[in-house]
Length: 151
Ligand SMILES: Nc1nc2c(ncn2[C@@H]2O[C@H](COP(=O)(O)OP(=O)(O)O)[C@@H](O)[C@H]2O)c(=O)[nH]1
Ligand SMILES: Nc1ncnc2c1ncn2[C@@H]1O[C@H](COP(=O)(O)OP(=O)(O)O)[C@@H](O)[C@H]1O
Image (cartoon, rainbow, N blue to C red; front, side):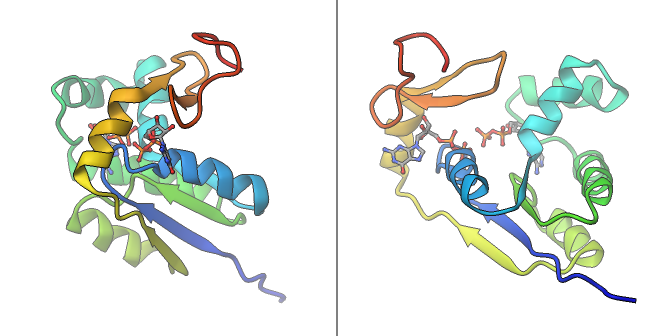
């Protein structure tokens, strides 16, 4: 049996550090699937799945979704793309999540975005998200081609 080497990476950093933006750029240049825990949760919230209903109450309060809920959701998705190289964004965020991921998969690389707090504040102030597509812009760094429109 021939076993193909698969590349598994995690991108970490506080909210607003640029995980989503950097991930988009990486997957444009490398054959990786980008899986974002935030996007996954938002899809579940939109579709009103059982997990989505539970997750919404935490997200709306600005809290982390409980470890067992998010871990089940993310690992289930990762098993679906078992034959693919992937880049995981937003997970793990806690030690129990990291332990669960480490047990389930061998991780080849971790990118840790180290961005000063003031820079994060400035970026989040200028962040602009198009709700329908989930595309992320920045009014200074990465503005949409037509102001207030998504491209
Ligand atoms: N100036 C600058 N802004 C950036 C950079 N990377 C991301 N941003 C912007 O910072 C904001 C937060 O980025 P995002 O990818 O949503 O961060 P996440 O919350 O870690 O996924 C967005 O408005 C991005 O357009 C960067 O390298 N420089
Ligand atoms: N690994 C995780 N563990 C717990 N909750 C999470 C996790 N990832 C995402 N969430 C929930 O989803 C929300 C949105 O996440 P995300 O899109 O990554 O945005 P941000 O990077 O701006 O926090 C978080 O505020 C949190 O409530």
